Image (cartoon, rainbow, N blue to C red; front, side, top):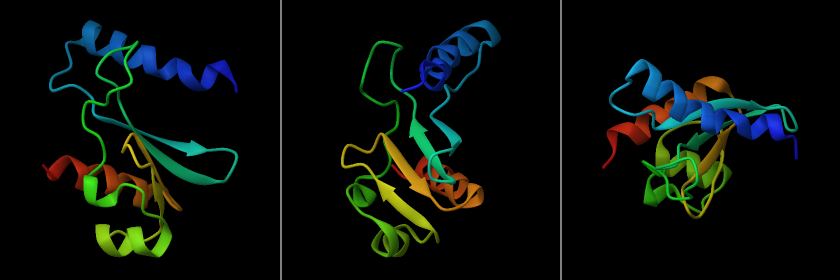
Length: 106
């Protein structure tokens, strides 16, 4: 795996501190070069932690494709990991909608 791919994680914490960003960043949306789809990833609570600041909604976790799109109300969904740290969509707008909807849900 390319180390450059993961460098954004540390950079998020550096930027938040330097720019005094509040509230903290919850999700990062990025293109998945391997599949030409989009991903959204929950930011961890710390640079060396695995727990997410705001995991994707429990009702989405472990779901794929049409079932996930139906439950979330967002078209083009491809998956949400069972732990809720990452999800995917066929389009940028879809991935962004997943992030926005996740922010609004408890």
